[in-house]
Length: 125
Length: 125
Image 1: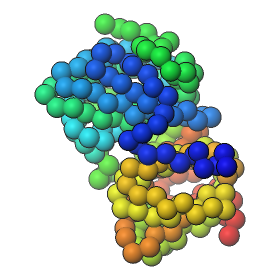
Image 2: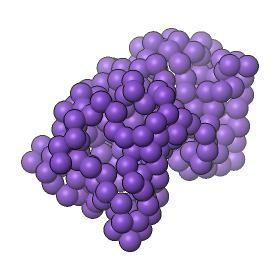
Image 3: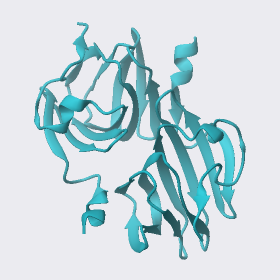
Image 4: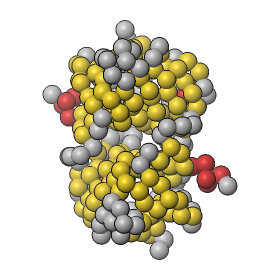
């Protein structure tokens, strides 16, 4: 029943990764793309970084400030965005918790295993 | 300000495509992946088809029956699933409307332009 394992729910499962303090991810790897459900606690910072992988993000719950290419974009549930390859990005929450679905293509290979940190990304600041 | 156009909302925008009767999509193409917000009316059928592109789906609103590899999977908002390359898939709604976020890698190249139908997919039945 390997096929059954293709079905998931956003609230559970995945490979755990602590991206930064207050940012915990559950990673679902595929062949050509990878999903990651990221829970961001209030008052947390995602350090600005970049990588060759294209990334899209969908704000599923709450709100935060997406920092991309040096510009701050306030986003809320229902907003989504593309981060082209190599574009520096990060973000920060204010008083509210936020849940973001991150999508990578190709997959972040180092995220196929649980761990901490931003993998092979280049941290800008 | 090309960078600004990287930001969207699930409720609007995108390249329109009528996938089938009762299934309308708004497509957001990237370089290595593509997002498509699909609104499915009650009592509608997505014909079973397959393609080489890996696909993931996230049920954002409502519920439907996902048909994948010959098995019917009832899914609801918050459920998501991987459809590996070449796996036949489709679905049908019952009495409720459904909104699904489809994610393709690599992109469905024929979906970069508006239109009707399932593009280069092989319709199974």
